[in-house]
Image 1 (cartoon, rainbow, N blue to C red):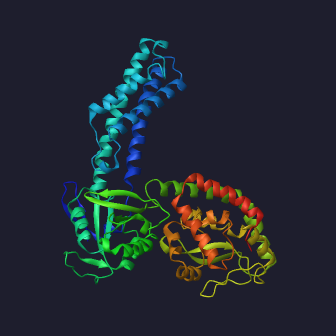
Image 2: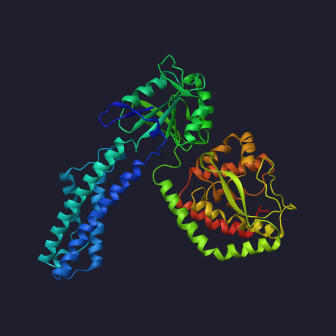
Image 3: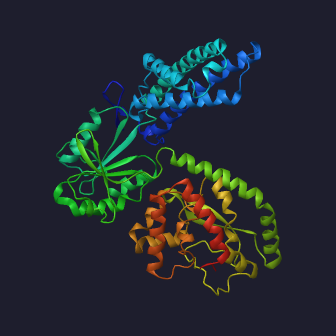
Length: 488
């Protein structure tokens, strides 16, 4: 059971099953409300114009109507945003406030005069249109916000927008965090305390029940039960905090450290932001790479582009399949277990390029003159065409078009022992291509430096992801494939 603050400010027990439910993004929800407000203004402009033009034979230019509606929508959005109508922290109490909504509409109405539709161009009939537009948009925005107020409030009470917070360290600082979260603001769900220096289930001197060790915390984070981790250890444990932070960086969660610690002990190369949770000062070690719009945009990008490539490359698929069957005995496709998001195991698809089908504890990396590779397979590997079936893995949601390349499970296990940050790649879905691949860090890993170079590029990609970066990587991949660099 976790502890959740209700809309009345009291802490209530949260069923364990709710902790397993993925948290919804407050920012996405409030942005959708803002988009609907803008749509209401546009409908308020277009609908009366259509009625007047159709039934009153009023000559109206659609382009100018659209221009006016767009100007008004942007002005209304600006006003309401300035008045904190789109504050994600108020998701459970969406402001309605009819006077302010009316004022925003009046400001937009006044500003659009002469900017969108010149008032004197149509005379009195256009005044009727303006007033009708103003009234209709006001009513529509009011209705939208009333519905949003009820719907989002019910979702918030149900815990769908809760930020599930766990604390590492069962000391005095953890006690303060626990007290604040249990009696704090809405939407904060205290998952529990973890510590390696106390047995799971034990109640310590601060009255906190320890749920488990750091391994248990990592397991809960990989299962999607936690959104935010706070490391709350005493000042004397600075070095230990740095070690704990490095281990927890692999999780797709927001990670914070109570700010009695100098930031350079976490990562000398990074500049960390400082935030707060009520009276607690926090050092932000990393942000959740899956927050807000990012997973939605990433998934939409994957579906659209993967579908496009599958359709366009269908003839290429058929030609490759025929060549493989003609060249050697065996199946056209090859499946191999790989690790994906949060180290989940899935079957990656590839065109078969070898005489063998290795997928056990003795998977051997291909070398430049590997005699296991078929004649067609050598061409497919050099051009990376053997990876094309992974477009299906992208559509099913196991992979992305762009991300860290997945490796065989046995290699993951071995390389995790060599480089502790290797596992941090599992914060996001693996990709068909990635920043490491276009940077030349692809092919056989024959030395520790090869592994470090690849991991550093992958972590750089995770920290700086954007749709534009993905498109850039996809375009550069075509050039890298054409050169066949480090592929065999």
